Length: 389
Image 1 (tube, rainbow, N blue to C red):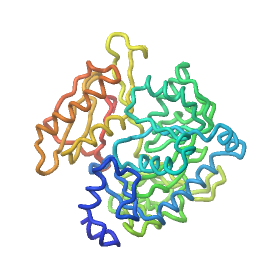
Image 2 (cartoon, one colour):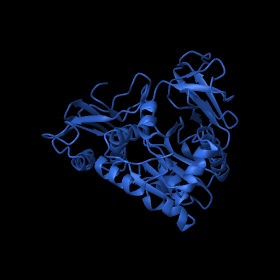
Image 3 (tube, rainbow, N blue to C red):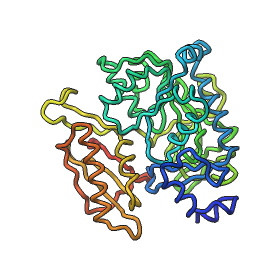
Image 4 (tube, one colour):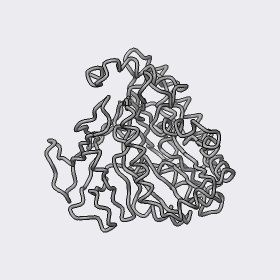
């Protein structure tokens, strides 16, 4: 019922989908006054969201507050002294929120465009390392799983950069990973829990909690029947209400993530309510190298590299990439209505095979599953499932 949702009746799903399917329009204005962003479909279906300028203004203001919570005046001066160079490692080729933000940031002066460099998340790790070494960014903005891989490269000396800040996005981090990443780079590490539906939802503190921007978003931890869960108890899911976006109001929207709300004030001193997220974690796929790879027999690929190449394949309604053996991927697909399932499969297999080959993993088998994508107990369709889980 997309067409019943927007407050501007000129916004329709047909127009929004046509806009979102054109990669040349990333960062451009939709219907002259709005921004379109799509999700990668981690909950099972790709979402298309429309934002007005008021929502973007709030997002920018709260991003400033977030960075201010992470950095000191000295940190800011160090970034400015190095030309404000920022490397963004993210999904490209679509209207993902990060890609739209990058396109908007690069617009304007030539100086700003030169200071921001975008690296596709599917870039093979050696190429990504070489590019970052050349660019020497003061700020690196990667997905959390990619940051963990880059920290490993920094630890062994292949990556040699000295950023002031790593601003992580999109995924949670296993225990201890944040400190490992910070130690590897000798830098501040900031992360956030957010969604395309509410891009300014929260930001992380040094005590491992996410502080909710409660002046612009309402977060409700609830049980399976959508009844409130008291602070300190793990929720079944979380409902969010975006108080900024008036063109496509997000009201009590079920994100599908399990959270725990802190029952007492956070020891970091931030007065905003704090939560911990139980249901999101980075799922890096690790494969055996083919006959003595350079990384002591193991090659790691971030999950969003797979999400990016499969998501851009036409005719897909739902997909899941599961590692069923050390060198085997099983792909579960649900084709969109009217699409030829065999043609869709051939296109997906070609994209994944190409991605694996770029990482020196041509020996990894890619199988077509007879079964459809499987839903997790929490209600999500995880798009990438490592072997160990």
